[in-house]
Every structure is written in C-alpha cells, then in structure tokens.
Length: 122
Image 1 (cartoon, one colour):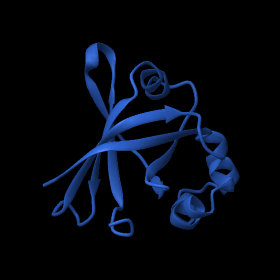
Image 2: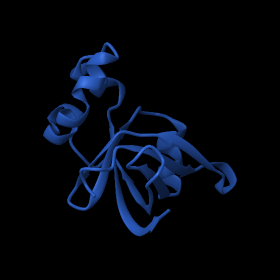
Image 3: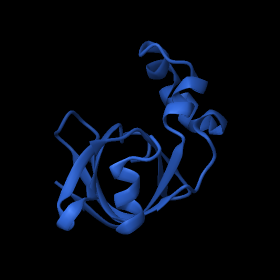
Image 4: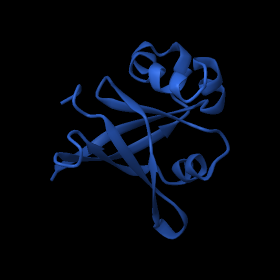
C-alpha cells in the first residue's frame, strides 16, 4: 500500500469543528504521514488547537480510496530539504512549478506528522 498512495486531502478542524479540506504532499515514515505546511496559517493554528484529522488517500484515480483518521503533531520533523524520501517523491514536481528545493522548504517550513488511529476504505 505504501507505494500506491499518491494523492491526498487532509481534513482539518476549523472554527466550530467545521472541517476544511486541503491538498497535501506526504511521505510515509515509521507508520506515520509527514507533510509540510506554510507557517502562520489557519491550518497550523487549527491543528495546534485540535489535532484530529482525516486524510483521504486516492491510490487509483478515485477507484480505490483509503481514509486514515489520526492525530497531528505540528513542528516535528526535519526540513523537507533534509528528508531524502520527500525529495525523491516530490523534487521533480517542485522544479516543474519553478521552485528549487530550498525555495519550497522556505515556503513550507512547518513539518506536520500524522499518526493514523483508524483506517477505512471505499
């Protein structure tokens, strides 16, 4: 399953427990998801207040959807430039968007780890 999960959206509690959906790039590491976020955003503030999230993971253009519910920890992890698996997975896309790995890391400096607590599939 680890190699098949490609696209994902993370649902983060917002005001009054309303969940907002945000696309994220991630890698799996030691049974947890690792993603990066811009600093000082509603996403980061909401996760610090309520760490409950769900990730909708699409492994086959919508035909195989896996949902991971879990708890997020903000600020735990290396910069994306120092994460070999993250660079291997996303560097081509980062460069296609006109960024360097360093510029991307500066724009998305906040690591977010998500520990899955429940899995569902559709």
